[in-house]
Picture 1 (tube, rainbow, N blue to C red):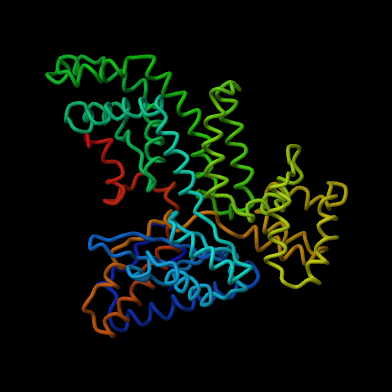
Picture 2 (cartoon, helix red, strand yellow):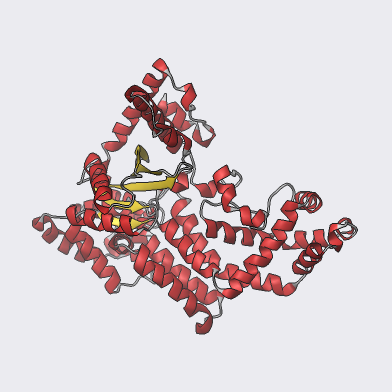
Length: 487
């Protein structure tokens, strides 16, 4: 049954908790557990990543979900009420250690935190001190959103966003311009959703730019000009904005900076290939794109590079990113591949920490030398052709058998994600129900089983949020509030 559910795709709706009762619950639980066990068996070869996803509910409780990602699929493990642990490093460390042990220390390549906090950071530091082979990472989505947030604080960017919000607030707060917008842009919306506030801001700005001609047409139309709203101060202000070429030019300049960064999110969250082999290169390419988009003028692009470098160096970068870049055969054999201290140190760090057997480490060194001297003439034609077509981990599995130790090492690194589980939009209500006070032991177990079933079925049938831009949830609507009504 689970196989049939998975094959149905994103249109499938997991059963609600009130629909899972009695023998139906038992049968569903048995099948979901079997599928989870099948996925678990792959972790030894491919490695896996533990993903954290946390939030505070309306009662002030701090809840954390634990998921495991691997090439065979995402698995929901459990959620916990971490209210008593969230501000205690030792308690968080104990909680994280228990999950690592449950998944299997030898299987876990990294733990990805959903956000940065001093307590989580300290607990993560203790975790990697105890488990030398495990890396502590911060969600790439979260970090890129931080970069965009800092860019959004720059005076000229802040002004553009303020002006753009004035346009959407007028349209979404008044029936006439809203109806005109819906007719002119054929039922679409100006505001774009994302679970990340700054990403949503700049996606929306880009969408407004794409509808420039339609917006100008609306605010120059006879219907608008003859309306009472057009003669009011707010109506006049927005009319002037929409027909002001300087506003549009400034908006274009902003998106020239933000689009390369948003493109990284599309790449790492919007495709089926594990992104570990691409993030390092994508960040560098985004910086170069920003430089080129700003005409190579240092006074314009260097402040932006500094923002990116600050988040990269202090938040995002992990040795796994460097090793993934080096071991990605498509990038390694490209003309613009480069190796610096950050890349080599990251690669060596991964070898030392992930491989505790000195004999295996010694065997990898000559295999790395052979990989370094790789060329089209030393590979069969199929391996050359597939280098740019196959996911890097699959390429190593298919063509790396001459270097078996390096092959296993590369597969484990290149099979990992860079982001937390928030991109899959799991619903929070079932997890909050699990941890409600006053439940009997039997009731608690029943709700835990419901949560396990519902979340895993949803994970196996959902798309990342980049493919759900038409679906606006109540949680997402809070992020977009300042585009709709003045705060």
